[in-house]
Image 1 (cartoon, helix red, strand yellow):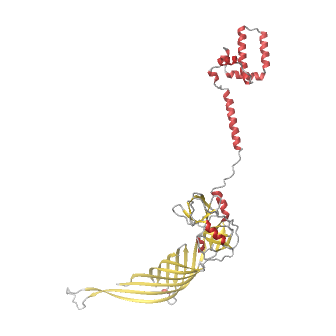
Image 2 (spheres, helix red, strand yellow; image 1 turned 180 degrees about the horizontal axis):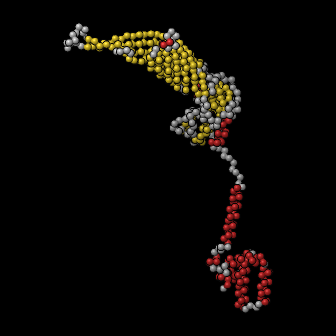
Image 3 (cartoon, one colour; image 1 turned 90 degrees about the vertical axis):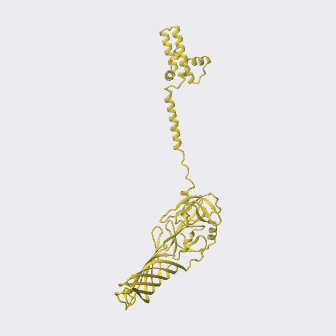
Amino acid sequence: MALSSTRPSTLLIAVLMLSLTGVASAQEDAGTEETTEPRSDDEAASSEEDADATATPEAEADGEAVTDEEAVTDEEAVTDEDAEPSEADAPEATDSGDANRAAASTRQRRMPTPPPSTSGAAVVAERVRPALAIVRCQGARWSVGFALGEPTKVVASTEARGCRRELTVESLDGRTSTARSVASDGPVAILLLDESIGLTALQPRTAPGLGEAVYAVGVPGGASDPAVTAGAIAFAGDERLLSDAPHPGGSEGGPLVDAEGLVVAVLREPAESGVSPSTPIAPVAERAANVVPTAEDVRQIAYPGFGLSLGIVWDSGDRLLGASGLFSVDILDRIVFAIELGGYANTDTGAVAQKVRRSLILGNVSVGYRIRVAFPGGGSATLMPQIGFSFTYDRSETTTTTVGLVDPTCNLTMDSCELAEMKVKSEMNEWRYRPSAGLRLTLGAVELGYETYLDTSDIGDTGHRLHVGFRF
């Protein structure tokens, strides 16, 4: 049968040709051929079967109904091999898939960009930054602070109360104002600015939940932008709050905030265990709200200081080693009255068979003026020139050793003569009073110092002392 050898691709081509030339033209050509050349009955039957086969795809394409007899004929004519998709149909399917993917890609490109996130460290830093400030004592960095409740009320760490000199607050934009410490006790320092520097006050948030996400906000030394670290609340009490939000040293006084930028607590010194303590904001906010602009400065006028040092003394050509203690009274961290007392000693071999032991009790009363120098990054140093009056108790002990006969009348030729060692000691005690001058350099708690004790009558008796120690 002719239809069984015809592939679907051939039928598709025939359909396309008929659609281009028209069914009427095909019938006219067929009629002309039949008129000019008569065909046999077998050829006519074959032509009818080909026409039916050709018309079937066309009818299906046009949505026309197919009779049961034609459907049976088609099922017999089309084998399983012909039922599979042809190679001619593959490009059309591929082109359709490419078109669908292109349309999907176009829709993706046209999708609107989602709005930025409203939480996270970056957003917290942007919200909290206008409230942050650096507290300085005579230009040296002492604490991080932030405005709370009102733009001119600043909360800082307790270290800010230790400043006895000019106290200033500087915003991260570089604007500064002098400030007064108005809280003499409590876990934080509360400062009042003498003028506004454009800070935006943060608002307190009480009763944080256990496990709630929080952010520790600090300002590293020398930085103009905050450092924000995330964590969660591990413990929330009335007087202490614990969180695992890490913050570097020097961030004390900074805020611990929630995701909305509300203050939960004030940062304390970080702990090595990974869970750092902080002060809940509720009592702090209550005290700050009760502070009035006319509150007086509660800084102490005078406060004591202590020191201990090891040093070496050059006096009258001798070098003596020893230690001394210091007691001082600082007035507004400017003028320092100090009393120092120490002991120094040395043992030296003098002339033949002589040993000299010398000891000094050295005391000094002085007055100095403290000059504080600030370094970039928040460090500071104190330079203090001083003048005073010294007194020295100088005690020298000289031991002379000789060897002689026990019995001077002994005959040296006899075995009974014995030799003995004899020591003779001589002492010299002297009090001396001399003017003194010196210079001390303090870096944190470490102090380096040099003093000279001038003897106007004998320049050779001028003493010098170089020492290093700790100042508290």
